[in-house]
Image (tube, one colour):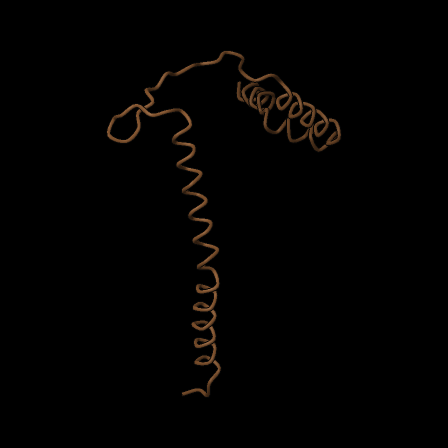
Length: 111
């Protein structure tokens, strides 16, 4: 009975069988996995489309036009870009002064 149970465990040890098979024929396994990955990447996605209707409300619950929010976001991004371009030299100068002061303190004679 014990010998039969040991044989059954040996036959049902699938992780060991897969590892052994991969060691004996890695090219076939790699090709099969590559083909499977390619098929999963190329396979058509879900075709059912789900439409969700949301109310287009702006500030204070007022209806807003469709392109209004996009335009506001564009202006905000342009403003941030302009501000960062103007402040970049000041920030670089400030950081370089702080780092050079730190380097001067570290390279001085030991106390």
